[in-house]
Image (cartoon, rainbow, N blue to C red):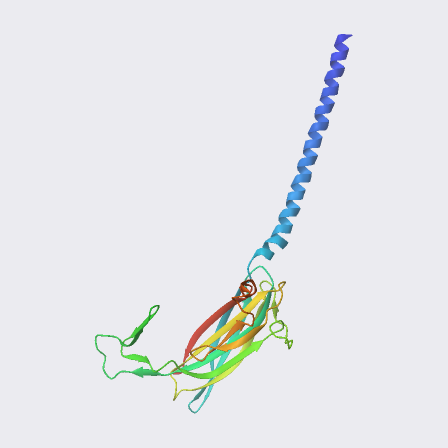
Length: 236
């Protein structure tokens, strides 16, 4: 009789161990599933929302034709969302400047035309730049969210690209090369819009800046991100 009770006790213990093992396996499967769901939601939703907006700007320049001393240059400006979150483009500025080069009569051992400042040094042998340049084109545009007047919406999803062509005409009798500068201002697409205004820099180029007082509302201005791109095109 004791032997039968012992076998029955061992059977009950074995059943409890099997149920406990099954419960542990079930909990492990549930936990793995929950972690997979969390990981998916984090990678797809949470992580992108925490990433800062990022937009790249490039400009492709091509000689489109000539008439007399005038050269037509086709500029293709491409903006691309290279980040992981949606972007609201608020403003765009386009500055084109013609620059004249001054050539020295003699080439000495010391580079001519050099300029030096606290943060930059330029020295080229036998030539220099005849002044900062002359404005050929200044263009600016505000999109929806940057002005109370409304405006055309301009949003970029991650990986999305938008291009724009522009023809610029330059006088090669007056300039030796042309400098193209593009400035872009944007925020996250899911953030409140930010009103902008245009300003003129000391060198005469157009820039974008918030209408808000950044000293009083620094958190508002911190939402605004900018990307600048510059390239040059010889008229020779």
